[in-house]
Length: 489
Image 1 (cartoon, rainbow, N blue to C red):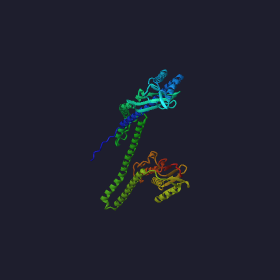
Image 2 (tube, one colour):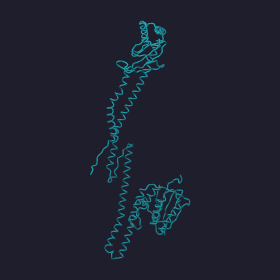
Image 3 (cartoon, rainbow, N blue to C red):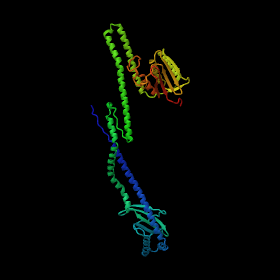
Image 4 (cartoon, helix red, strand yellow):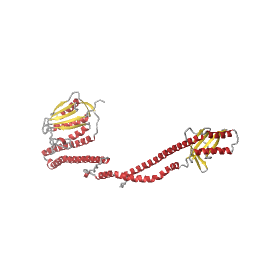
């Protein structure tokens, strides 16, 4: 025999903890990326504004006419192919340096003043001769300029602006590589990656602790449900006062167990009733068989009486078994297809069929001529035969049965003037194997299953059934209420 494998999946609290940890890590990663991007944008914008402010201030100082004349002379000297003397160059650089000091330009900002002479760019002054002269930018704009391995020991990474100031051009820039904040922003993603592992551990164990605590009532419910069996179906799961989802789950389980207990008790009672019903005819059969074995072979009278009794009891048992099978099928049957029928013609056919079986019975029909009904005629036929047979069986001969249909209420009724039903028995007559005669004798020939079968069949046509009786010897009326369904689409 193959040994059963004990496979255990990952606990729900662990799954929740893993999921929560992954979510936290993703949030941290996405947040760091978004935050880094936003900070870079904000810092770049702030640097651009500062660079533009300093550049405008420097350009205003350069617009002094005396300074502009000096710049223009330097350009003219170069344009006439005259030698650009070191004294002129020195004077121009000194002027640019003096203007930068007057404008209080920050130490970290690079600047270059240049002009165009003979289609060539002529630098008139700068504090960083290694920076290249870049294209003029749009008015009030800055540009990012990057060249890989521009220097021997590094890249060129600057933010610059270039504008025309009178007769010359002014280019200002700041180095992005040496900015500590910008460097920190570049390192921030790596810092976040280093902190992810402890964040993952902390979030995992925190989520596992919280989820295990929150799921403890579910664990208790599972444990209690596993302990409930057929021998203790009356046990229930404790319900908390929190009125949350766990409370609703516990109530649902308790409702399920209550229904299971009711069904189990009903099946147990049903089995007991069937055993009780079969015990008597089996005892009778056995007694008469023994009687036949002893004296029936030589005594024709005993033989005939025993055979008649055996035949009657076997027919009773056969009827009981057939009714049990019919009841089982009716309980499993689903809602059936419905047709439009003319009620009066349908009831007249039912009466004609029953008269053929019981010609002594008096029938009465009260139904509008033009009444129609949407139902399943085959199932309704079975129901009415059961109700009419009951009326005949429990009425003194000759029996009187009245069939009526109220088209306004959509109500079908079967009435008789028979023995009636006691008030204490009325709520139980649709239960299986229930008979008002507690001795359960077979004088009436009933098995106590007919009305239970009718009740299940009525459910299959979306209707409901109930009984009315004023008491013993006052007759009984069975009502079938149909739904208010449209007859035409």
